[in-house]
Image (cartoon, rainbow, N blue to C red; front, side, top):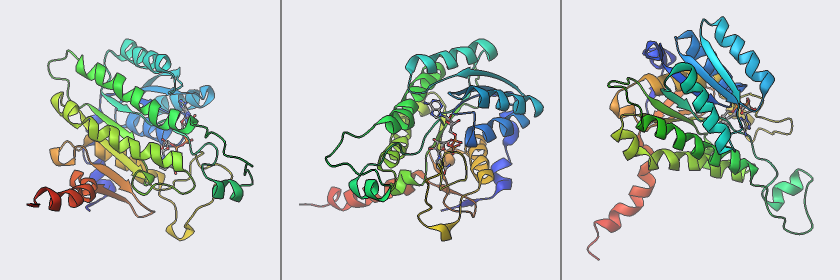
Length: 292
Ligand SMILES: NC(=O)c1ccc[n+]([C@@H]2O[C@H](COP(=O)([O-])OP(=O)(O)OC[C@H]3O[C@@H](n4cnc5c(N)ncnc54)[C@H](O)[C@@H]3O)[C@@H](O)[C@H]2O)c1
């Protein structure tokens, strides 16, 4: 799997100049850091989050970086709220070029009895799980993607230039997550969304990529978070941001529909499309070619 240096990630960062970038979950963590980094490279920002105060801070950071931003309170679990964010972006900047469906939460509640016992919240009978994690981390992303594709499809510019959707996956997109079964399901679903959209995105010349980090120290990691393997260290926020910049701006077709991994504290790797298909294909091919 090719390693991608920070220098390589930023090689084409000038392609962000003048692009309009919409980010959900923009008030903190990855969204916040992407907003000011993209602004430094000349992007205009459309920022949505449920955290009003956080949005005001990020807007100031974008302006300090020489950029422009419009902001709206946006709850990604609400279709109308997301539509309103896109409409604000269109009204303010006339187009939307790059979309980061990034808003997310860590697991809300504990999924299995073993974890409930570990965290002292065990029940004396099975209780219906709280699916809020999926509402935000999966349904919210489906909404963002559907609206983004609608706008890309109806983009009347003769030569619209660089357009992309950069999803926020996770290493749990591949591994699952013992402490967060619903979180892992949502993040595996992100790859499902990207793969399902390949033909449509190709037909309208839109890039799609997934950035998949290991644990990063952001407010997402709540006070009761326990690192399952402290020897691995934490992935670095700057590597995550480099991966977003690189995956969006590297327009080489072979990097389209790829996942950009930050698997530990040692940088960025690009997993080719074939990489995540290989398991399923590997199982299917011998039977497909079998004479039985
Ligand atoms: N931090 C990590 O270890 C890590 C690792 C892999 C993937 N991720 C993913 O990265 C993304 C960003 O996480 P982060 O680490 O920057 O966390 P963060 O908590 O710093 O930021 C997440 C933002 O999403 C917002 N948000 C939450 N629910 C929302 C909703 N319903 N509508 C709109 N906004 C909402 C929060 O207010 C917050 O500003 C998430 O999708 C997360 O799952 C994080």
